[in-house]
Amino acid sequence: MSCECKKIYQSIAEQFVLRGDVLDIEPYGEGHINLTLLVTTTEARYIMQKMNTRVFPNTKGLMRNITSVTAHLEKLGVETLHVVPTRTGASFLTAGDKYRVYDFIEGTVTYQSAPTLAVLENAGAAFGEFQNKLAGFDADSLCEIIPFFHDTPKRYGDFLIALGQDALGRAKECREEIDFFLGRKDTLDRVTRALASGAIPMRVTHNDTKLNNILMDAVTGKARAVIDLDTVMPGAMAYDFGDSIRFGASTAAEDEQDLSKVHFDLTLFEAYTRGYASAVKSSITQAETDLLAYGAYLMTAECGMRFLTDYLAGDTYFATKYPGHNLVRARTQIKLAGEIWDRLDELNTIVRRYMEE
Ligand code: ADP
Ligand code: GN1
Ligand code: MG
Image (cartoon, rainbow, N blue to C red; front, side, top):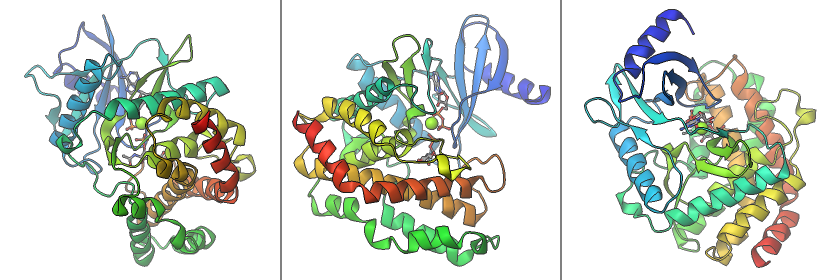
């Protein structure tokens, strides 16, 4: 980061109630949405984020959601994000862009892939437990911060619009990927239909349950805090379970270019499922259980479709590091979604076994 940028960010950081004097500011983490910075002062460390106001235009609603969800979790004795106020007592700062600061949760690490099966099992238990803790939270008090976030048929419609517009003439480079999704239109509506008919309940869910959205204890490998609470909204359990599997049960990174390395791994799936089931088996309904494995397919296909949509639209949503980055990401998700779909029966058997144990 240039000295000029650092100076600007330092003056922004100094408008929050920090302990000590700012020593350093560096980019941090692997998030695709916000710009995350690590702020080091003479006394403590903080996470400062320039919030993505294209993705989250309603900053007030967003921060109200986060302060109320974290207050709820704190009351239950759960370790969670702590919003550091500005010097005028606000939860975020407007300085051209919008900024917020969290205490850095020390002694933790985030993983881009699970180093051991135990870490994945712990993540499953933590996201399941997170779901349990939010069961008593008043969903009506939450602002639906990105409406239709996991409405996959609606996402399919967005994909068709981007394809129709083909803003940069990229469609010709990704015919195979486009055809994959066009051929799967009828596989994308089971969760939205189940919610609409009341077959499964609407719950308060996290909606972005990637492994790197959980802080694990650096020593014990146990989950400490679920983070990235921007998308906590009403949703289905299949979304949270499914998105964790999408990311955590892959043998390779979300943006691996060598597709021969990308596989859905049954052992990883089983480890996560074991942890998740241990937390939710007393509260999950049969209809929800029946949709979990399908949710892994759905979230993977949806995410691949979103990456491809963004590629077609000119990379305006997800942060990218090179021109074809979103297409590379779409390809990994297509490969995984295909493999998950082909093994759904086997996956359902595993889910049922752990829910009944
Ligand atoms: P994004 O929405 O862009 O994904 P996140 O809120 O997930 O942003 O933050 C990006 C990364 O920063 C996380 O994956 C994690 O590694 C780190 N991080 C975020 N908040 C904290 C925190 N309070 N303490 C320690 N690390 C954090
Ligand atoms: C984004 O913010 P981050 O990087 O944790 C995205 C998720 C996608 C994910 C794909 C608000 O998550 O929905 O699944 O990238 N978040 C938003 O890696 O769109
Ligand atoms: Mg994140």
